[in-house]
Image (cartoon, rainbow, N blue to C red; front, side):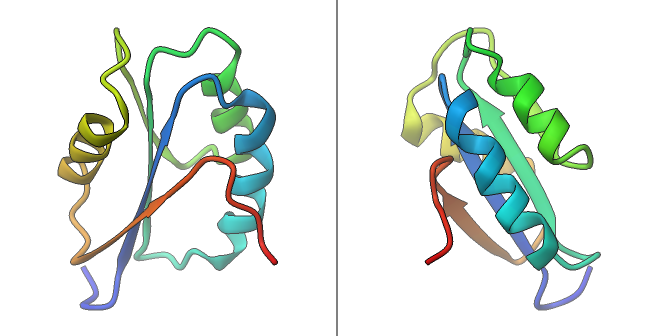
Length: 95
């Protein structure tokens, strides 16, 4: 693992309409050593399919209930091994 590797953790819930564009903008910025973790809080709107379509190499953690944002962040961060973590909203867009 590189010392400057970054793990991007995105917590989603009913985010199918927004997360695809976010992941498409983010993916070219990630380096080989970087990690992408998406924790889905029990969405029923196709969010997981949208994530897998836009970022097939992402680690997707599907929850059986909505943990809430903070607990979702904690679970997502725990799944990473990079020394740096970025918590990113699923509707983030480049300027």
